[in-house]
Image (cartoon, rainbow, N blue to C red; front, side, top):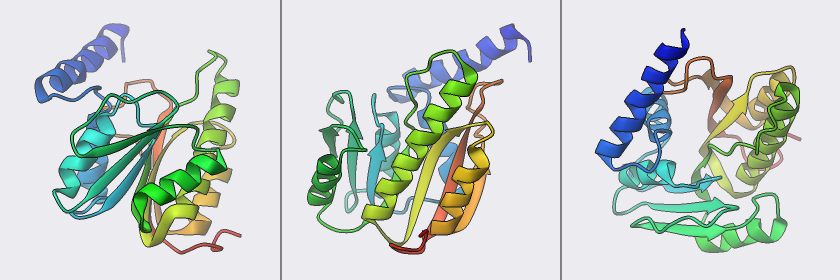
Length: 204
């Protein structure tokens, strides 16, 4: 796809996000994943990792409805979102994980992670950082999900991706790789969509 067409594609979702009141066009990635895989249900408790600026949490709180809850976590401060509990911290920090568990007050139904590393511009390095972040999100999911829960995590293409997919498959019954239409053309991001968490100890 030409540079002009890529810019048109990006601009389309940017403008749509403005119209629909989302903080970022990444909202449509989760909406498209949800349309295809139905990972979130009404009444669910959802934890959104790497949530800033909060577009995925905006989508999630609308999907779970009044009886559901969303907890959003990021290293950066997240501006308040109606109905969403926001936390600031590092998801790899065990104390932060304990805080997540305390705030959730019960096992979680869905863990989302659209987190991305601070990119260096070196594709191999960025890929490695992405894989480390995805595995960190998986570790959090294994701590806080209830059996049967779902997990969505962003990853970057590269040589270590099969090992990450394998780790997810060890912990979940159904695993798919998806690239939503709203992802930038030429982007090497993909999403692992995992359903049916087997329970703690299943991947080890």
